[in-house]
Image (cartoon, rainbow, N blue to C red; front, side, top):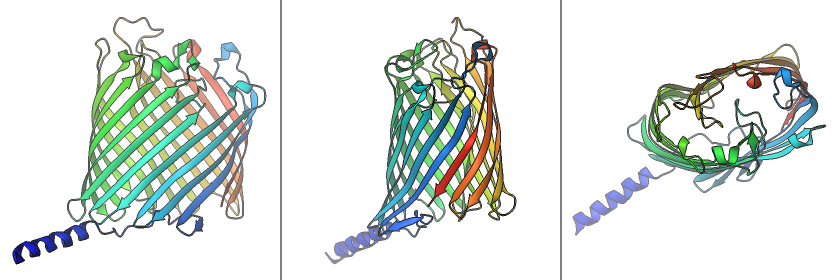
Length: 403
């Protein structure tokens, strides 16, 4: 009896140590406003109040349309501490105005919320997101089509060794285009409405307190509501390096190998490399460099070329010159390599569209939170299909205020 009681007490003590609160950095450490357990970082932005020389991304031969446009974007990151756990999220609104072309006006919203439970040997997180927008979904579709995206994901990570963690994560996302969303005579509701389900086994090892190496094994299923010819499964192996948000170099860089398998015969598989880059570096509060890149499979609106491999990178450099003045330079490149369905009639077999992005601007800071800038950005798409070529220029003023 005494031995059983002793073992019971030992198990309770061990469980208590395993599920005690983990000593981790405050997720809301950089919050600007605090109201008891609630922390907020609000931002107000007026984005490029100026001229768009090609509102619809029309080819030169079609006579591009120009208009005055501006976007007002209030955004708030929030954190709420409840006992030993955190509720956290983001609210972003986008009010898009076009003076002449009323069809391009929209009110967009992105809402995220999550629950973080950090324990000594176990970390649990669950998240949800809701996007309602009439913005372009990527480089391929030029129409500002109304769509809704609903997502839910969760993860569990266990400390297996002193610096090694093993976990699982799952995600489910539903993409729903409006019934009347059309691009190049294709109904996007019928072509691209889909549910994507992802599951992964994750491994992470802390090399330093601010740097971790990761390895994930990912399984993904894509199921289309009205276009089952696009259904596909894929398996991906991903290795990467993750830098803590408090480090000078922050973000993630990862490379992988994906085996993308369409379920319906007549479409080639993709077996090859993938990549994700999202890094930023700040030096002496005067220079900021950020780089983003991707290489992965994306679904196309055209059922005869139902997916493409997108490879691209964008970079931005911000340099404070003197006093309150700074200068910004941007450049980007993306290549869309299409895969053809066997025996399908397509405008250009195995075509590759190429995007080039160049831009920059100057800014003037007023106090610690307000910045006024003037920006110029040009984007072009080169393609062997004439109606897919375009060139557009945007220039105008931006105002950003962070509390």
